[in-house]
Length: 258
Image 1 (cartoon, one colour):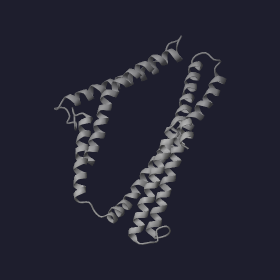
Image 2: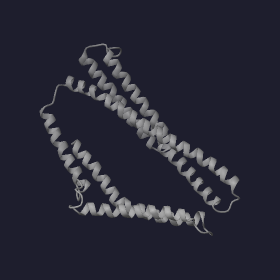
Image 3: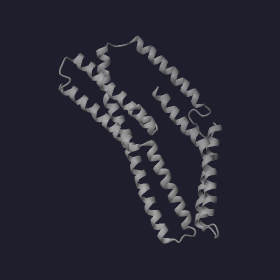
Image 4: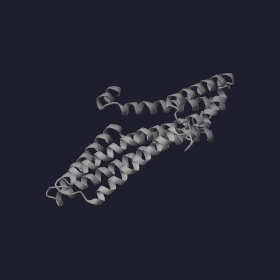
């Protein structure tokens, strides 16, 4: 199953490169045209700028041709799962999961053993929560820095240019950046997501430490402590998912849920 998940990830990247490179090539040409008309509308575009866009376009063309040759040629390169759709790999993964479930049912351990196994898997869950929390904190940090720099850039460009090209184009670009970042920050709420994930990870880790040390509330027999631990951690995970769902709702929907 781990191998199938790896193959699915790799195949997704292959398909993304195969179909995404032409899109990037078109976007490169459009950016080339837009840059010329925004910053150098009534004057010649510098040769260095033309050269940069040309180099990017040639690189994308070469990458696309190379991917096509690798995808449809077996002699040049042995690309794993070439010509195989992602849906077929997902079907193979589902079949493998069904076989695993049937085998697990045949060898199902006792409830105490399952609870002990659940406790051993908890540190991995804490690590996952902390990793996602760090990701959202970095996203929020980059958004804030882009917002600060764009806001400062608007004031600087306004003071420097008065306001013909390329100053007007720079102002449009900076204003667009501020609008997009503000909207994305308000919609995805990376700061709130990072806080919730970090809080859940800290609470789960606190329960793991209490269980290992045998302190309250885990001061009874091992079987009772493991049952209480599994119940508590699952409640925390359900609460975390509920908070994520609330963040995905619009503001009015959040008030109704609360």
